[in-house]
Each structure stands twice: as C-alpha cells, then as structure tokens.
Image (cartoon, rainbow, N blue to C red; front, side, top):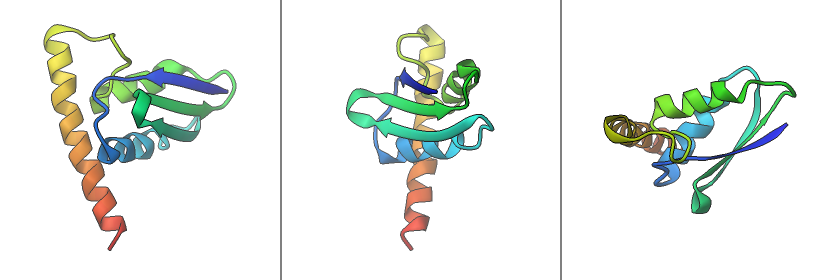
Length: 97
C-alpha cells in the first residue's frame, strides 16, 4: 500500500534522512521516499497497516501532517524538527567519512 503524507517543517536533506531512518524502523513500513519540493512523505507499507502510527511518529520527530497542529503545539513541533534535522545532518556526515 502506498500512502502520501504532506508534512510541515521539512527543510532539508537532514530532515529527510531522519524521517527515512526513523520510519523504516516501524515494522509495517517497507519503503520511505521524500519529495522535499512538495513537503511530501511517500510510505510503502503492508496492506492494512495503520497509517496513524506513521503520522504519530512523524509528529513526534517534529514533522506533523500538514495543518494538523496549531498554537503552542505547532511551535513545539517546529522546535523538534530542528533537532531531528541536526541529527539527520550528523548522520549524513558520518556516512560520508
């Protein structure tokens, strides 16, 4: 099953690396692709998988589904996304050495 999730706070390759790495840890997720130009996460998962698990994981990383958080919660996810982005950038730099 292929699902599309439009997200907030996607800024760069560091964000994309973190999202791919973390979502691939979920048991039902088979493949993850990022379309940075459209703030889109493409998730291939087992038929019948609960997509809410993926959305909850994205939100916990700071990348909630587009227009689903507001106010303080939006500010909180924005801050989390910077941390996730930095982790992704560090992960990318260690892979290239």
